[in-house]
Length: 74
Ligand code: SF4
Image (spheres, protein in one colour):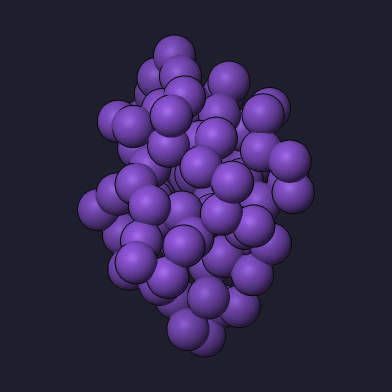
């Protein structure tokens, strides 16, 4: 499965970073960054991370994103 961060939707609230620092960090541009990924300029500046198993805090971070910028795709 994949974790997807839609950069264009991120409002930089910092919620995902405080809930799940294992996966997310704040950039100098004031947007979230999915650790270990690069921005895909061909796909709306999204970031995608392949994961085997969903780790605890990830689901909570997704549910608490105020702009629905985060999702899991199977
Ligand atoms: S919770 Fe959503 S809007 Fe807030 S920093 Fe994370 S991705 Fe961006």
